Length: 276
Image: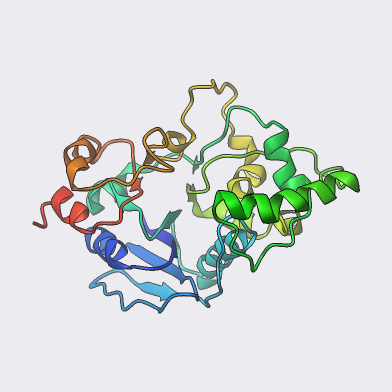
């Protein structure tokens, strides 16, 4: 099977370079968006195609993340290449499968994570209007200074952008889906509902592909595991795996996790796949 891996990247590219080395294969291509706030990296592959798309500045929590996600999907759809699966990762994600296992593993239509319930704290992300696309809002202080007043204004003026689109879903923004579903996401006619949102990237794929939501999801269900991602939110936000965690990560190699995050040290990948 042929795979297109979409990468949302920024900063140091050394971890992504090691990911490319592990999955370097004629049937696996990488479509890369590199945040315009950082220099474009000089990545290399022997067999995979590395396709960089037009760059823009990306800010956490804003709709710039959703826009970039759609731009990456558009690049794959418009490439006219015959891919079987499309995957979204970040530049700090690493594979937990060697390339041969990776190419054989996927069989379901969608590996997408869903939250167990959608409460008001989730609905307001899509319901209210957030004009913050070019604003760095990361951090508790910035949240209080920027987001809280915006939400207060929305509340006072009774803003509700969900009146005509009441159903939304939420989960991890990383996914693996069949190519046909990527085309469906690309052609979704109501994309504007995800613009001017807060953390809307965690609702984007789930809302469009809501029919893949499991009928029963418990409070203890792991939306990351549904998406075949190994991510630990108990030890961090999320936890950053280091060299000391290689033994733990090895236990999940060539299992039911396609990727792990978050990793900042490229030596982790080298140790994990015997490159060191």
